[in-house]
Length: 389
Image (cartoon, rainbow, N blue to C red; front, side, top):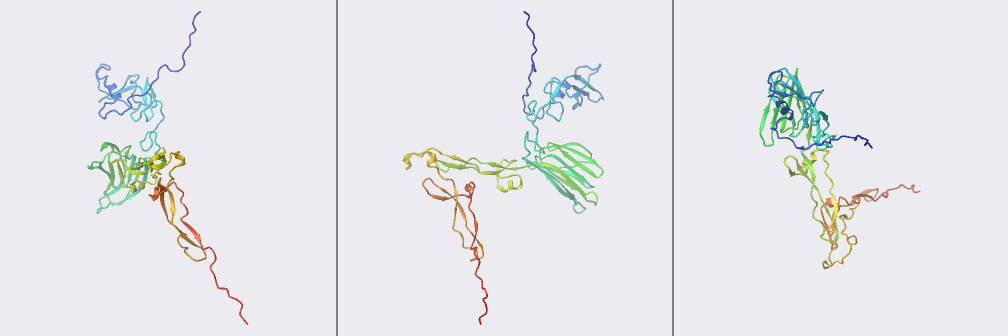
C-alpha cells in the first residue's frame, strides 16, 4: 500500500531574542556594517562608500544604502540580516525579511511599552508631569533670568518661548561641573551626552529633548529688546526621593509568640542614601507605606524559663494597645461641655509587665475616643413668680 502524505500545521522554525543587553556606545550600527560590506564590491563599474538608509516606510527590512557624497540610493540586498532593527527609533526587529514587533522587555511578540517615566511596563508612578507657563521679565537692568529647572533624568522635555528674549541652557552635572549652551541656528545638538533639538522661528524658540537628561538643565532667558516673553514648559520629572520599606525589626520576644514590624525610610534615588522624611513629602503622590506586621518566635518557651510548654496560641503575647489616662474635668458645669483624655501606646511583656512604646506600634490597634460631651443637663435659671399681695 502506498503511504498517504500529510502536511504539518504551523511554523517549522521558532525564533526568540538573545543578547538582550545594550551594545557598548562605540559599537558600530548593525545596518551600517551590512552597507559597508559592499564598499569593496563594484556597483555599475564604480566603488562607493555605502551608508545606511534608515526608516524606509515601504520596505524597512530591505538593505537600502546611499553612496557618500552622491545622490544615489540603492537596494543592495532584499533582506537585512536577522536581528537588524526595522527603524532607528524602534526595537522592532527584522527576521527573514519581515518586521517583527519587539516589546521594551526585548522579547519577540511582546506588547510591553515604556511608560512616560521610561520604565518598561511601568505604571507611571516613578515620575510626575510638570507643565505650565511663566513670563520672563528681563530688562537692561536684569539681563538674565532663570525660567525653569529641569532635573537630571527628566523625559519628553519641551520648552517654548514666545517673544524676543533669547532662551539658553545652563547645565550642571552630578559631579558639579557647569556649562552654558546657547544656539542661534536650528539643529540637533548634544549637550552633556543628551540629544537636544533646537527650533527657531519669528519670535519663537523651542527646545525638544526626548531624554533622559544626563544633567540638570536650567533654562534661562537673556534680554534682547524691551518686551516681555512667555515661556511654556512640559516635561516628566523623575521622583528623586522615594519611600523604601525597611527590614523587619527584631521580634518582641524570643519564644512563645510575638510580633515584629517594619517601617519606611526616605531614599535619595540619585545618591542612593537615606535622607530625612520631609524630602519624600515633597511629592503629594508619594505616600508613605504603612508598616507591615507579622508573627514571630512562635515556638513554645522551654520550661526552664518558668513557663510550662504550651501551644503558642495559648500563650501569645498581646499586640500593643492604647492605654488612656482619666478624663479631664468637664469644660462647663452644666449646659453641655467637653472633656478630653490622652493616650499612650503600651505593650505587655511575656512576664506581664506593661511598657510604654512608640506610638506607631499601635497603628493597628483601634484608638478609643479622645473627646466626649459631658454635663448635658440644663443649667439652673431664675424664674419669676407671681407678685405677692
